[in-house]
Image (cartoon, rainbow, N blue to C red):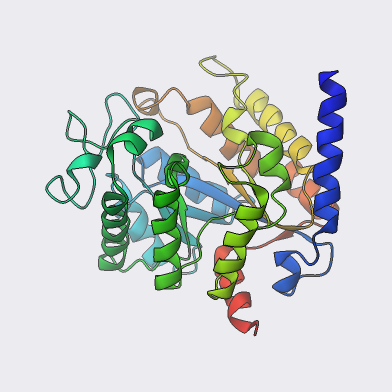
Length: 331
């Protein structure tokens, strides 16, 4: 019975996808029916391993976009890389939590300015729920602006903004401040405002009904910003080999196959594909137990089989920089 309901739900979503016309990809000038993806690496600047993984995934693999956690210790190392590679499609991974046990960071606005964002260790709260419980929307806005200010102070103008751990989607007033700053600063923001086929299939509705999400998408578009049709945010759940000793060959085959299987559900439109590519060293296990997952993402991006699948299926690669350039040309 559960399978029957799943099939019916899937057909319902598919019919809604087909009914939407045109997609934001089409509005940006891509062909009708085009499947367009951003292969996006999160958590850059979080650690040395994160930086090296992102660079390898971009330079040697199919990843083509990323975002940086501005409160974290290895941000300068990556910004120095970007200054040598100014065409890097790099945004802000707006960070409002500090989730690891022994490796932590504090808000850039400072405790005096945002006391409700700070826990008993002087770092940001460890999880989304705690941030949503303690912080105010004013705290959130101050910290977003502080992270943007640090980037610009370092000579880093972001191509977009998105949300670490989805914290900015935890409360309507948090989301409102995030969207407001994006529109005010003319910086594209990660927000699925189209058919949302994959994100609804995986996690439901982001706390918003489809009509609400599409209304926000229209508002962003009318403000001159590009809008995502969908969001692919499932790779962090592919944990078959968590905490196991496994070869790179096995890990690569597993992760590549998971990406290929998931891409069969891609619908026409612009979809942001989120991943966490990390070149794990012996240090990373002291930061997080997600090393195999993150290393697997990197290995998948380097796998010729994934590149071949994308090419063979006519999937178009894009970046946030290109989306904004296309949006600027649309009247």
